Figure (cartoon, rainbow, N blue to C red):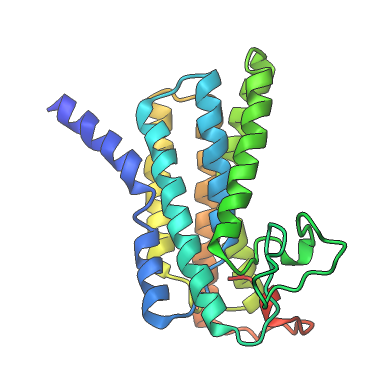
Length: 259
């Protein structure tokens, strides 16, 4: 029985993290509208889980946590693919933005001559028009951080710092959604089921870290993540019972809108 409970907990750790995104994914597909979901959530989780995998090479932790990171990266790429397709399909006559150099065969991409390599315009970072641009960015980040980790793998200070950055970045998961809700003065378009699952999953995950004596970085940042989840739930209550007047924003081109 004890072994079965252990296997169940490990399975929940591996696949439990992706469950909250299922209702959000279905809502976006059903409504063909991704405005209520911040694509920066995907960015945060991609960075956090890539760093966590690199941390594993320096300090081997439990295999379920490693597999959780692999599954989460795949899930976030699927979310990005859907959000990008939906956003682009809803934007007409908009200048296309890309991470890589413009393709001369694509008539919609007309980057200025000075941008012959990468478009580093921060106003359009993570708001590209093709899913392949996000994949290129993720691969570039993985390659650079992987090479740096290879060079410094023998340094315990670097490895511990890498582990802290991995879990701290993941702890900030809810912050983009928290900020987006604040900007909109509403939680409309955001799946409340997703946030409830975040909260229950993060609570379970933090208890799992503590009971299994995971590296201390995991436990501390797990608690921080739970607090952020609770803050988002407070926003749901506040904006549903006390509707706020939307904040005025300076007009931007449609392509600059966050997903």
